[in-house]
Length: 263
Image (cartoon, rainbow, N blue to C red; front, side):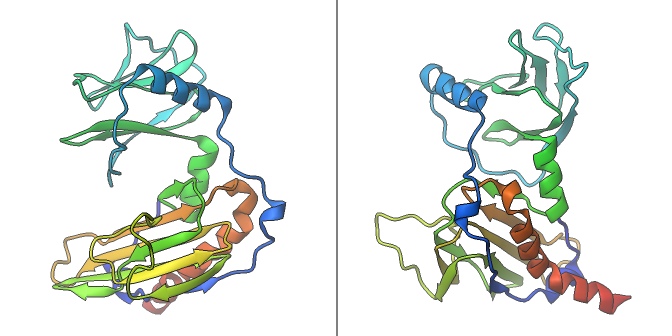
């Protein structure tokens, strides 16, 4: 995943750019595999609905190789307070070892990939990236993909508060306008919300938005810069790789300039 040092963070300037796209007509929409729809229906019918947990910055990674993965519920793999096994119908199951009433188990398709385990005081959860998807994220330094319509309002921060500098950048293949306050009605929600936002971007006619929020402390060199690079699209991201690669190159351009000047 993408990381930056403090020198690169301090050199960051806001980026706002629209690139040319081949258009939505040539791209397939993202469709969840059937097994995920079946699992969603099963959980909806048989499990209490839980609020989606907040993303952890440092989940524990477990590499899964489907061939030869023969852990069972009776004799599971034990990792970081989690039990992991192969179910009788061939699914990958992850469940907290000391399961609390608010915790649940997580079923996934058993394929090669990375299982992420998150242990927080108020919640424990797991998510899974297959090998192809994880390689795509790492190639472009993307931390998260949100599978939804990318058109709407994005809130970010381009300011300095106390000793923290925030830089918000984005690239899209749509049209965008910027404002200093939200343009949403009371019944509307932003795609990306932020406390004390200082910039509000409205995006229209887009197939994707790639945004990056960076923050770093000026008074403490021991605190690593915060960085979140997120892709928002309801299309198949692999069919959009050329556009995404160009968008990432726009965001990375300043990093390359800083690295070159340091040599």
